[in-house]
Length: 565
Image (cartoon, rainbow, N blue to C red):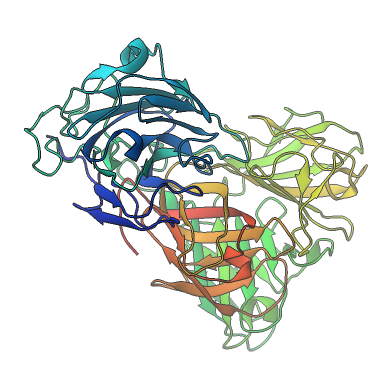
């Protein structure tokens, strides 16, 4: 078997309502408390959206009404009977459940049987098999007669993982490609996938792969193994520094960023000083504030130069308070080189980094409902911040997990609100962002700046989760190790940010909030892991029970390479 890197297991960090026993390297699981009705057991790896994945499960004990297994979305739940609800396709007893609806499948699995699972990540079609026979004359290799297709939505989530449930007598062992003997209970199969990875009892269908790090996808543009200058920490990096001001003309060269940044979002963390955002499209010395509605200001003694390995600041205390501790979040766009973009009805000026899914957009509003601006990216933005530059006015925030009818104010703690005046009830496309008539995004003749991002596998992730209010909080899969995490409640709350520059080991405890000038706080208790983050806090700003949170996460090591922190 070829070297497959890290192979998926079941994820013991997932908070479950019932007692479970994990063993055999988190591949074997036994139940002692009946079916869970609020969450399902999940795998450590989520399903790549450009791959077809094959998994096997051995029924050690119980069978029939004691085991259920399949695939489901991030927020899919069991139905009232403890099996598959909306956002899932799974087999339970002799029935298959497709988004909550059950129908006949094939013979119920018994102790000693092997259930087979296959999923096409590009379309969420699922096939279910038993002892090398696919149910319903399914043919995964030809893409036909699938058991069902998983529903996805903003409320269900778009990311999919393996899921399983257990009854009181259930015991099952999974093989994601580690061991075709399932812990030595049967003879080996010795079947690898088409890339030479994995050890399966039965031959994976043609085109279907083991769920392992070697089969995870990363754009060649940011893959550390394929590039010397464009990997994740060359696209985004937080940097800390200590101020050295003696006068306004004092220069402090901030180095160690690793690249020349095009957007720096910075703060003096020890006092109630405003945040500053400076970018290379508007020009150095032109600052806006994320916690204020204030129009763009010229600050000649602030950040005055972008350098090859960072930036330089002068003697303004907001940038260089003597002996003060600072944090700066640095994104790379296109080295300050902008271009005119005519994709929209409003001509925009764009500085886009298509490798990292980040764009700086400047434009002049026309006040028309349904106006569009080109963003210069290859995919639709999932997170957008817009600020009017020429007048005091609140920020506007778009997040894909909330949808195109919702808006938040970056410089406020108010709840997300609905209305068509911001995004014209239109989701951004691969080429344009649609605007309404609200003055914070499209007042006639007003000038604006917008920052737009979309997820890039192994580098950035934007999504949502629901808090449970206890110290064994949610685990959220991001596809790599977080470097910066922003979390915002959908009810009233702060845009809280934590990072691995100020906290260099777990738990990550130091937080700031983009919407207030407050000094640095502590006590968030979040673990940054190789494949996501785990909440270990009761803080209402990160883990309020039953509350939905949206998040934005930038990574430094893709899960494909699985370094720990």
